[in-house]
Length: 362
Image 1 (cartoon, rainbow, N blue to C red):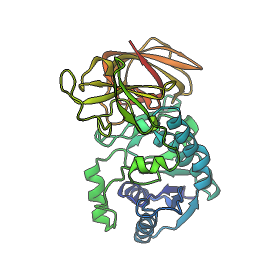
Image 2: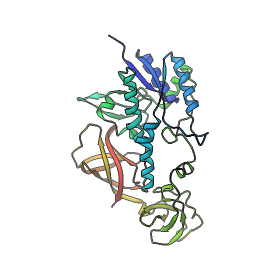
Image 3: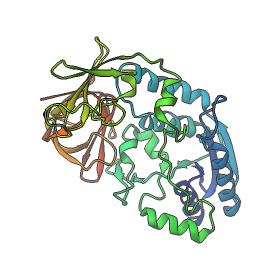
Image 4: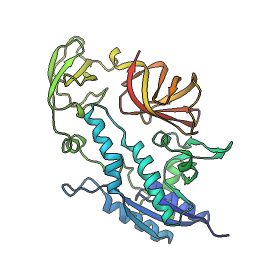
């Protein structure tokens, strides 16, 4: 019987490095693949692809496994970045990491790995995908502070069945310790917090290169003109910083926060106070529903949900589900429900699926 070949997506970070290490220790034939997904001839200093490639190469040399390189720049531009820009143009705030996973890491990469003869792929995500009851389940990673199931809710049964998450049972501390013991150059490397594959950079400057500024009024929800914004795309619900109206201390004297966008008037709507009622809603509508099991649950369904990464699970009820979308009611009003972001559903540690927030209401 031949030894199964597993192709690991190596990002040059510590998590994927240890994923490869664990698979080698388990006796698999392991290959590494470094994906290049972003090219920018106009700026340097923000995307660390060259450094990441060298770190991935060092890890493979330490493990004695081959490293392949592949360029998915065209796929990323077509499948992820075009959507990213379209969402911002429409006044929404997208989360490209979820689409990057479904379209690049678990589709384009999976297809490439199969061409390399892979039986499975593996990544450094903090998640688990046991097979039981006739299907794959997506579970949170054991390290609650690093769990990445939120970003993986869009995976289907074929993708999950073809993937291993070797570090899903470990804590970040354990991962770093394993990397240090193996002598990896990545053992103390800082976690990336930038846009998927694009890197860390001044976000407004980056976005303004693709979306021309369209200045408009900043108004209170009562209609008072307070200032001017540089473009609705540069602001998101719940935002405090960067409004340029910090000196206006009406009424309570509290800071201003973005509460909404009037696209027809190109107006940014703001309120005073972090806990202003206009920032809180008990219900939301979402579109593009996706369910890990492959079939929609039967509503009403008591469960938990996150409307942003790292948010604590919020008790809710999935009130309605159909092909066009879903409706959710939370037990407690949620602050800054943001169109374009993912709402992801759980029952305990299991991720059920999710959708893209369209609107919030009471």
